[in-house]
Length: 296
Image 1 (tube, one colour):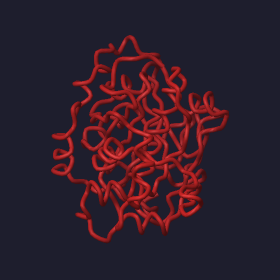
Image 2 (tube, helix red, strand yellow):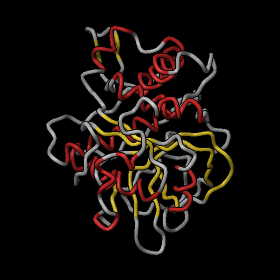
Image 3 (cartoon, helix red, strand yellow):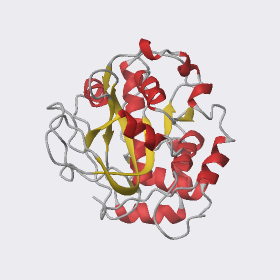
């Protein structure tokens, strides 16, 4: 809802500055872009890939009263990527990223405190933070000095000014994100998701928060907010993408499209997804260098 914590900062200049540093700044420059639309599955449900590799339902998170949505949207996208890589046979373990780490790295190590003491971050900063510093999993570190097994709003606020503690940076680098690239169209989102690359989507588009009988929420209002796209349907009468949010599991009401679909999410129609992506601060993530063409 409009009074919930948001936290995306729209800054096209900052996004362009990050794009200039990436080897594959736009999806069309990656190997994954050589897949044709017709080669992709007609639908992909990321929450089922997560269940397949972890045995658990897609987790539901609540960012609370701090505008740390960019870190949650990024973490959700990374979770999709990790699960897809494991599903495809890559030798790694599934984990939930430390949201506070992504938030601090994006604002401080990448953003150089340009946003001051206020909340919020930029999607491109979070994407570059993951590629440069890696993604620290939730866990206990340095003989219990850092218990990061659960998200903590106070820690998120503190690290949003101080950055990730230096002693944790080498640990984060053990969990690299090799590539990140900008996604600007629904077609490219389908291609990315079909190949196991999760997407952080940041935009000013709000939603009704009441699902219709097909599990879709209609566009409504203005949110300066970051979420993630972890599924799609490209055929049928209502092609669209499945969005997961970070406001808990009860904010969005109405029937889910499938009994196992996360209650923190909903479907958005393809044209709505496209308009969100065209705002330019949405990124896909790959643990494999070059973001190659692949199958999940």
